[in-house]
Length: 63
Image 1 (tube, rainbow, N blue to C red):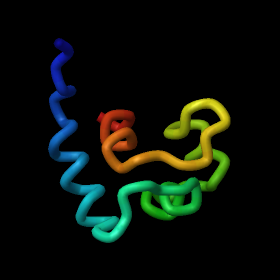
Image 2: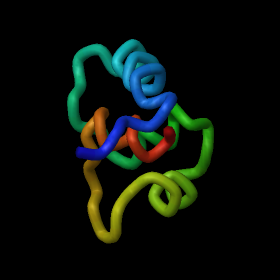
Image 3: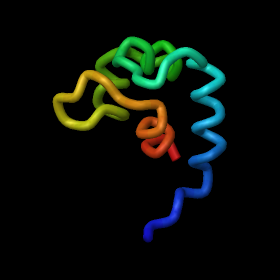
Image 4: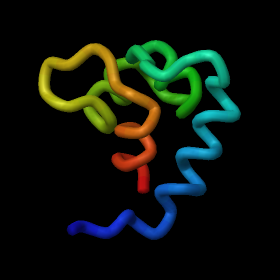
C-alpha cells in the first residue's frame, strides 16, 4: 500500500477551506486559487485533456 505524501493532509485542508461547497474544480477555479493564468494551471495541475479535477486529486498533485 502506498503512503500519503508528507503535506497531502495540509494541502487537502487548505483546499477544503478555499472551496467549502465544491468537491470538483474546473480550470478557472484552480487558476484563481493558484494566482496564475488558466493555461498555466491546466499544464501544472490537470491530467491530459481533463477539464475537471477533484479536490483530493489536486491536493495530491500539489503535495
